Every structure is written in C-alpha cells, then in structure tokens.
Image 1 (cartoon, one colour):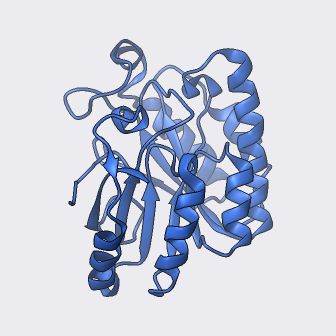
Image 2: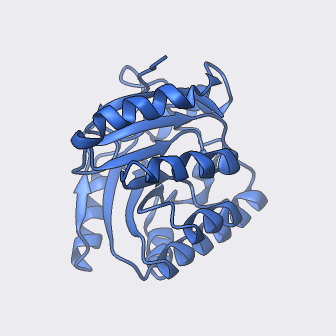
Length: 247
C-alpha cells in the first residue's frame, strides 16, 4: 500500500471523535480545492510499514474512538485496505473510512465483510467540484448517490461533509443527496479555504471560490430547518487535510 504516513492521535478528522488516522495515496478525482492533492497524485508517498502501523495502533488503541483511513481515496487500494482492516478489527478498534463514495463496488465488498463502522464523505455540490469534465462528473454524481444508498442499506453511521464554495449554489444537489439517505447521519459544513492556510490544487479556482461566508450560513439555516444535526468547521480546521508522517 502507498501511504504518506499516519498520526496516532488526531482530533480533527472525525467530528467529536479521537482517531488514529492513516493517509493513503491516489485518487480518481481532481477536486480543485483539494489540499492533499500531492497525496492524490502519488507524490510524497512510500510503501506502508504495516507491522509498525499495527504496533503503534495497538499501543494507542485505548485513546482513540476510530482507526480512520483517508487520502487521497482509500478505495483506490481497496484489496490491500481490506486485509489491513481485518487486522485492525483483531485489535477491537472501530474503523472509520473517508471515501468519495464513487467506487461503489469496492466499498460494498468492505461493508459486506463487516470491516467498516463509520463513513465520512464529501457531498461535492455542484458536481463541478470533482474537477473533471461535465459528462464524467455527472456519472460520478450518480455513483455517489448510489454510494449513499449503499451506506444506508448497511445502516452505517455517516458524517456527511459539505464543502462550501463562494458563489456556487450547493442546495439543489444537497437536497437531492439527502433524498438518497436512510441511515443515521450528521452534517459538517466545510468552508473551502486557500492560501495562506492551505495549498489547493488549483489556486486560480480557489481565488474565485474559496473563503465563503454567506453561503455557509444560508446552507446551515436550510439544513437546520429540516431538523438535521449540523456542525461547521472553522476556517483552516477542515478534516483530512493535515498529514503527519510516521516511519
């Protein structure tokens, strides 16, 4: 497995929980706001020392709520991930997976095997946030909706993260996504940020759409009006954007 490292105790990667977080490399998307784009592209990566990871996890297990896997897109390496999660389960540590929900087949295999207890995903709205041409973005959006239905069918607790961009109306897609959910979930609004706090993949895009203000409050009001549990990250405190390397 290709990784950029792990952090034995993290308090920013799953809302309200302490995690042991592993970053895996590679991704099938090109999100312009991505702060981990070097990991997604396979840069700054090295083979995972599984033995060292499991030993550190075992020593940290009493401190954490989840073993959290993020990226990149972890399901790009789903077969190797499955064998790792099986070993994690032997340590009686619950597993949280951060996935973009577009690789539905691999996700279903892990869920069917009982290897995942919690899922975090970004509802990227509008789908142009995938950073790909319109036609593949539309297909990926349809796969994402199928992923929401799959998570619901297994009754997995979901952290639904919504990246909020300045000047873009997310609500039509958020509303559609909610219709495909039938499991316990909560929402975390992530205002997209750029320099100097982060190094986004596309700085020109970020200069136009990062640092939203009114969009965050408008979306919060609409969601809370539906009785949904909503949390908002402060600028610069977004999950899964920080990498701490262990070797």
